[in-house]
Length: 543
Image 1: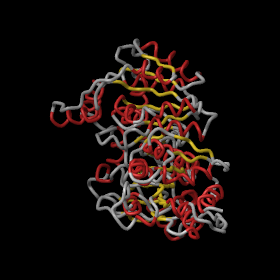
Image 2: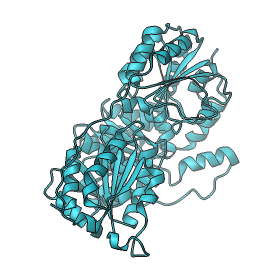
Image 3: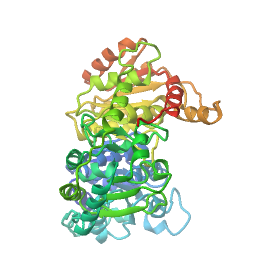
């Protein structure tokens, strides 16, 4: 058989369901081999969209999402999504065709050293220079992608190697195991927690990756310790849980900041530094930090770890809870009540344009608790992270490590493929939407009825928010938009424009029941950004 056929058999052996990508001249043999495979190829409209789809698919399934491009510009178009997956620790395997090995040693049409280009943004980058190494390289790429900390890997496949004959078989798939945490570290952590006056838990995306959400909720309830989650860990503890404080990471004084200010011991569970830099929540460097994760703690001057409980997160939490003493944590209720009151404040507000808080209230009301929201990057991300209530992990996907704009629409497509039984909404700004809006055609071609909710303000709203906060004036952030309703309809999608705030719930309800993709243009009142900044700036923590 050809090396390309062996390659596809190796992908099947890894359990690959979908490959997201674009055909090209240098991946012709792989594309042909896929025709005889159980793997479904999802043809996209831009390679960045393919990488974002693989990224979100990996987050939701804990199995590597796979994206494919041709050489040169096709491969470099993958880079942003691959980097996003790697920094956000989503398992992903990227594959690119390459020119024949007979012209890699010289200047040649569309040839770049792809393995070197992808090295800085992946955990493993390799070239298939001989057909007999195909099984080893594929197996390693998938193994490394799911080994903690999870991330992206890259395989370059020269076209002449893909066409060579080879007699080989895929290697057995053996999933890496996570060791149990050392008993002495567990005991040390339990002693620190027991002696603490005001402990606080900071839960990160590693809890989602480890499937340890229930163990975290049990740990917090048993020891009565408040839990703040990062943006990427929304739902890792149900918001209805009495110990849940909501999302940390607004980079401003907040109700949750009151918890950090009071804490003497911070228990970081599955926390990655890229999610919320410790200098923002630990500027004083004087708190005791307990690190509980599958991997040892990263080195940072603001993250001086007192005890590093590295190993299976769920096992670690269970064993620490058995040995540590319960706390009173009297201030949990007052902090929760203030945040809940703010969430409820604008539920009946009918001013227009629509306030961010009202959009979130209506969206949360329209969705079931297991439905999925994929949030793009922009001002709306800050509001969603702060105010969208989640009861389950991976029901609000927010990229906050690499934090690239343009992830929402392709991410929603991947989410619908991974969970066709759930409603899926892409929450995006007008800027982020137009970065990958071409993938709307992909959603329609594959009959994926996602809903795209655009927060329209004709501006790079998050940047304007920061400019106004720092300088009191904005700089070059405004632009014009097309008619989003006509734009959606030109693809064959349903288009809606919110012209009265009271119409938003009805529009959401109808869009969520459509059998085709829908686009909702919702004007947003981002004057609330500055009001929130002023409110949080004057916030006084309860005593």
